[in-house]
Image (cartoon, rainbow, N blue to C red; front, side):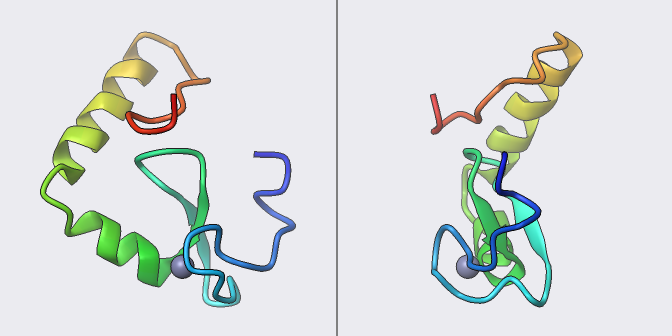
Length: 69
Ligand SMILES: [Zn+2]
């Protein structure tokens, strides 16, 4: 998270983050919007979003995503 707003390249594809950046739903990677778009089409994306929301409800803001633990 430290480099989230300062890094210039996508953690996943290595592409530029000029077009925007967002955190992955699966882990703490900072990814570009193209990767986010691909991620949101994954079969288990809904599950990842739900898991994330469950952790927020439990006030576990340090949750690293279903694949990032
Ligand atoms: Zn990317």
